[in-house]
Length: 253
Image 1 (cartoon, helix red, strand yellow):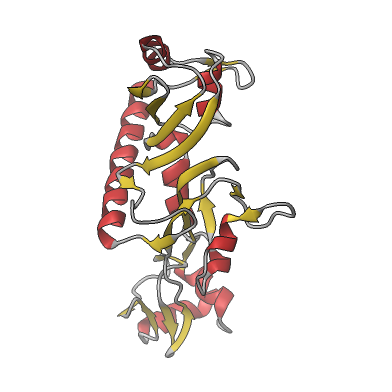
Image 2: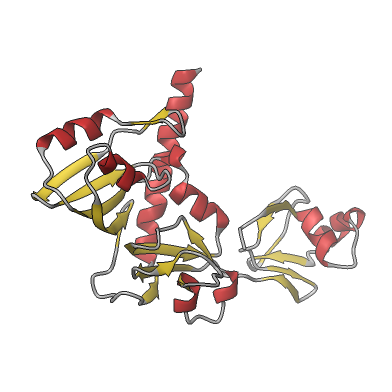
């Protein structure tokens, strides 16, 4: 489920016996409550995460849900799959069926994956226009050199998309292992960027998304809900990302 937004009069007419012409009278009689407060305008915007009551009857009361999963390898990021175990198979939660994955990790990629019922949250987290950083621990078949850092910072041309990747940061930990930071998530991007040097990625593990780091206490396949502080940090990331997007749009204009 995504947090789809509605005008109040439209929402009430779709979820009750009243038509849109009746809503003004209901408001005047204070018969509609939104999150415990009497609604004041037919133009008020509500979404699936507001608690909406009419004459004491709850019309909507869905709570947003945010789950961190340490995805193992050989588990597919999908709701259903005929051949492999899916990330949804790992989640034992009463509202599991309302969840979707915010972005995806390849079958052979492990690490941080977020699942939610909040469509706006997942869009802000994963859409490349918002520049949310994703950090990966990368293990390689051949040694990495400083030349990789320079080329990744410049960007690499992807012929299939006819585009150049955004600058990516590389921290070399050892000849065969490094941490790579991206602000986009193109198809098999990490593997394709190292493929520019004909260097094969042998293991890929996502460490973080924005300010949110994978909980080191979670074993592969384990999950937990995000804490209030973690959500606060991510929403700060979104606010900063939206500010950057607005500044870039102004520059383009």
